[in-house]
Image 1 (cartoon, rainbow, N blue to C red):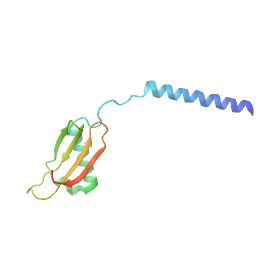
Image 2: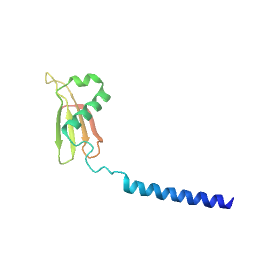
Image 3: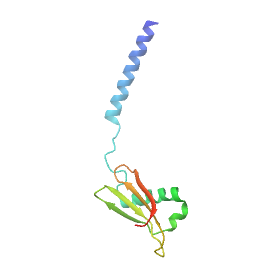
Length: 107
C-alpha cells in the first residue's frame, strides 16, 4: 500500500512537470491586439450592438469606426438617416477586446 502511494505521488509530480514544461515551451502566447484593425472592430461592434439591441439596430448604417489612441480603444457608432434621435455606440478595448461602453446616445 505504501509503495502504491509513493508511486502515485511520483507519477503526479512527473506529470505536473511535463505539463508545466509543455505550457512554457510549446504553447504560443498571444502578444498582439485582439481587435487590431478597423474592419475587425466594425464586425465586433455590429455583433455586440445586434446582441444588445436586436437586429434592427443594424439598419442604422453606415457604421463609423474611430480609433482613440489615448485610450487604446475603438469607437463604433451608427448613423441616423434623418439626424434625429439616438445612435448606438460601442467602445471596444483594442488590446483585449473588452466592451468598455455600450449606449444609445448622441455622439
